[in-house]
Length: 87
Image 1 (cartoon, rainbow, N blue to C red):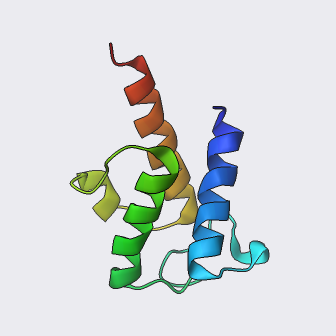
Image 2 (tube, rainbow, N blue to C red):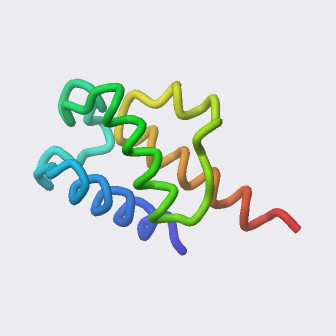
């Protein structure tokens, strides 16, 4: 799976779950500001991403540091790369 495919899957999964318009799905979009998600939505977001990518991320400290959609993209790309590189 390429980085672009990961970004597209993240965007489509979140847009569908939270009924987000495609024009707000920009890397610089703030999770709380532009995407208008709240702390409960963040829990749902983790579950959506886990289901989309097939790995657990609930206990990750990095999830607490996510502030933008681009942060989500980077997190998932790095997590997927680490899992793919594991023996």
